[in-house]
Image (cartoon, rainbow, N blue to C red; front, side, top):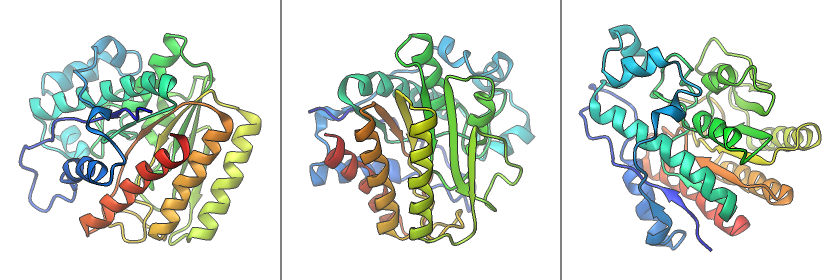
Amino acid sequence: MSFPIAFHPIYKHPLPEGHRFPMEKYELLPQQLLLEGIAEPSDFFTPKEVDLKHVLQVHDSNYVNHLLQLQLDAKHVRKIGFPLSNELVKRELIITQGTIKGATFAIKEGIAANIAGGTHHAYPNSGEAFCLLNDQGVAAKYLLQHKLAKKILMLDLDVHQGNGTAVMFQNEPSVFTFSMHGKSNYPFKKEVSDWDIALEDQTNDAIYLETLQNALRVIQKNFAPDFVFYLSGVDVLATDKLGKLGLSMQGCKNRDIMVFEWIKKLQVPVQVSMGGGYSKDIKLIIEAHTNTFREARNILK
């Protein structure tokens, strides 16, 4: 069975000296998936740029126009963390369309993934922390408007709170925003999701997995989604430079197993975006992200 995976042009613009964003993972991960036979060449698709009408359903037109025209002020650009360029904006538009298209594939295939994405710090009217447009937010609104889903769960397990997503859907009862993240991690001013679980520094595998299992049980009982967007950040690892949790590689893998087994039990489609991963050793980042794809195929395909 097909496992649709969105792949995108790599951002090549020089980054500021000392920049910690590991762009090479976006090239290495697809290679690893092919090497192991987790994915076939035919599984990958390269989307076109998203139609702005979909973006404007959740993002402010003034912000989007300034972004497209590269007219954001210097303070805003610093918050984003990337040097603003046409290349960067175009890549973000392609990533967003990859998540929309992946969501529609997931309805047919059960699961689809995005090599990039998980840009949950993008607010309706601003971007920050490497996030310009909220790819899963745009895709969730697309599904609702096209009556492809009625009850959507934003399952955010990145180490950082999905602050932009929380604000984006704060008045949308058809979308349940759940974020389980590091209590003392960025963003230091948290927003209010439908349900936030803030974990203490160095939370270990056992506590993390027990907390997640209990949360999934409650969500299933009280919300019962018919579509899931899963943000599978691997910055929960103890080795992560930007995270403060204490998960082992096996613990992170067990998290993905738990999520996919829960989704299989629910019999609902899932779109997965990769989110963060900033361990010093790129091999650890690739292994953790690859585990997500391994378990997705093992359990759901």
